[in-house]
Length: 118
Image (cartoon, rainbow, N blue to C red; front, top):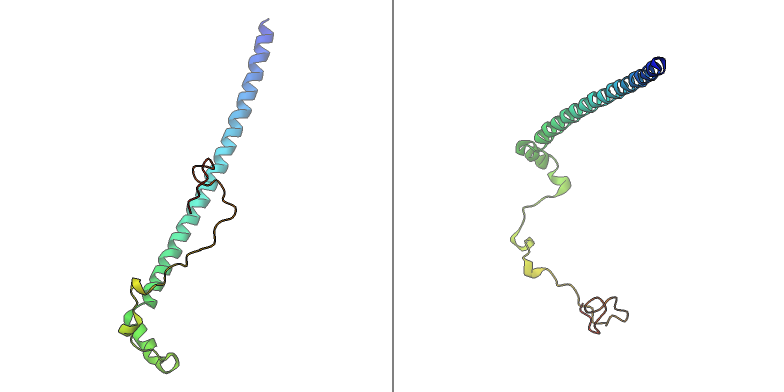
Protein backbone atom coordinates (compact mmCIF):
# COMPACT_ATOMS: atom_id res chain seq x y z
CA UNK A 1 0.00 0.00 0.00
CA UNK A 2 2.83 2.41 0.82
CA UNK A 3 4.39 1.77 -2.57
CA UNK A 4 1.16 2.61 -4.36
CA UNK A 5 0.83 5.91 -2.46
CA UNK A 6 4.48 6.70 -3.16
CA UNK A 7 4.03 6.06 -6.88
CA UNK A 8 0.89 8.20 -6.93
CA UNK A 9 2.71 11.03 -5.14
CA UNK A 10 5.65 10.65 -7.55
CA UNK A 11 3.24 10.92 -10.49
CA UNK A 12 1.57 13.99 -8.98
CA UNK A 13 5.01 15.54 -8.44
CA UNK A 14 6.00 14.90 -12.06
CA UNK A 15 2.73 16.37 -13.33
CA UNK A 16 3.18 19.40 -11.06
CA UNK A 17 6.77 19.86 -12.28
CA UNK A 18 5.58 19.75 -15.90
CA UNK A 19 2.79 22.24 -15.12
CA UNK A 20 5.22 24.61 -13.38
CA UNK A 21 7.66 24.36 -16.30
CA UNK A 22 4.82 25.07 -18.76
CA UNK A 23 3.72 28.11 -16.73
CA UNK A 24 7.33 29.34 -16.58
CA UNK A 25 7.63 28.99 -20.34
CA UNK A 26 4.34 30.89 -20.89
CA UNK A 27 5.44 33.67 -18.53
CA UNK A 28 8.76 34.03 -20.35
CA UNK A 29 6.96 34.21 -23.69
CA UNK A 30 4.51 36.78 -22.32
CA UNK A 31 7.33 38.89 -20.85
CA UNK A 32 9.11 38.85 -24.22
CA UNK A 33 5.89 39.98 -25.90
CA UNK A 34 5.40 42.74 -23.32
CA UNK A 35 8.97 43.95 -23.82
CA UNK A 36 8.47 43.97 -27.59
CA UNK A 37 5.20 45.89 -27.25
CA UNK A 38 6.80 48.43 -24.90
CA UNK A 39 9.61 48.89 -27.41
CA UNK A 40 7.08 49.38 -30.22
CA UNK A 41 5.15 51.90 -28.12
CA UNK A 42 8.33 53.83 -27.39
CA UNK A 43 9.23 53.88 -31.10
CA UNK A 44 5.74 55.14 -31.97
CA UNK A 45 5.99 57.87 -29.31
CA UNK A 46 9.31 58.97 -30.79
CA UNK A 47 7.78 58.99 -34.27
CA UNK A 48 4.85 61.08 -33.01
CA UNK A 49 7.24 63.54 -31.37
CA UNK A 50 9.21 63.78 -34.62
CA UNK A 51 6.03 64.36 -36.63
CA UNK A 52 4.89 67.04 -34.18
CA UNK A 53 8.25 68.80 -34.50
CA UNK A 54 8.05 68.57 -38.29
CA UNK A 55 4.48 69.90 -38.27
CA UNK A 56 5.55 72.76 -36.03
CA UNK A 57 8.36 73.61 -38.44
CA UNK A 58 6.15 73.37 -41.52
CA UNK A 59 3.42 75.60 -40.09
CA UNK A 60 5.60 78.46 -38.91
CA UNK A 61 4.00 81.71 -40.07
CA UNK A 62 7.32 83.12 -41.36
CA UNK A 63 7.91 80.01 -43.49
CA UNK A 64 4.36 80.06 -44.83
CA UNK A 65 4.70 83.75 -45.69
CA UNK A 66 7.90 83.01 -47.65
CA UNK A 67 6.12 80.22 -49.54
CA UNK A 68 3.21 82.53 -50.32
CA UNK A 69 5.55 85.19 -51.64
CA UNK A 70 7.58 82.67 -53.65
CA UNK A 71 4.56 81.08 -55.36
CA UNK A 72 2.31 84.14 -55.49
CA UNK A 73 2.19 84.18 -59.30
CA UNK A 74 1.47 80.47 -59.50
CA UNK A 75 -1.39 80.29 -56.98
CA UNK A 76 -2.78 83.80 -57.49
CA UNK A 77 -3.90 83.95 -53.87
CA UNK A 78 -6.03 86.79 -52.61
CA UNK A 79 -7.53 87.77 -49.27
CA UNK A 80 -10.87 86.36 -48.14
CA UNK A 81 -13.66 88.78 -48.89
CA UNK A 82 -16.79 89.40 -46.87
CA UNK A 83 -18.92 88.10 -49.76
CA UNK A 84 -17.28 84.64 -49.40
CA UNK A 85 -18.58 84.10 -45.87
CA UNK A 86 -22.00 82.44 -45.68
CA UNK A 87 -24.53 82.29 -42.86
CA UNK A 88 -26.70 79.41 -41.72
CA UNK A 89 -29.73 80.89 -43.49
CA UNK A 90 -27.84 80.59 -46.82
CA UNK A 91 -27.81 76.79 -46.58
CA UNK A 92 -30.69 75.27 -48.57
CA UNK A 93 -33.20 73.10 -46.71
CA UNK A 94 -33.50 69.38 -47.37
CA UNK A 95 -36.17 68.62 -50.01
CA UNK A 96 -39.42 67.14 -48.67
CA UNK A 97 -40.52 63.77 -50.10
CA UNK A 98 -44.19 64.24 -51.03
CA UNK A 99 -44.69 60.69 -52.32
CA UNK A 100 -46.50 58.48 -49.76
CA UNK A 101 -44.74 55.41 -48.48
CA UNK A 102 -46.54 52.48 -50.16
CA UNK A 103 -45.01 49.78 -47.94
CA UNK A 104 -44.82 51.08 -44.37
CA UNK A 105 -42.88 48.77 -42.13
CA UNK A 106 -44.27 48.65 -38.60
CA UNK A 107 -46.35 51.80 -38.87
CA UNK A 108 -47.80 53.42 -35.76
CA UNK A 109 -47.02 51.57 -32.57
CA UNK A 110 -45.05 48.58 -33.95
CA UNK A 111 -47.61 47.82 -36.62
CA UNK A 112 -50.62 47.71 -34.28
CA UNK A 113 -52.08 50.94 -35.66
CA UNK A 114 -53.04 51.96 -39.16
CA UNK A 115 -51.32 55.34 -38.80
CA UNK A 116 -47.80 55.81 -40.07
CA UNK A 117 -45.45 58.49 -38.85
CA UNK A 118 -42.57 59.61 -41.04
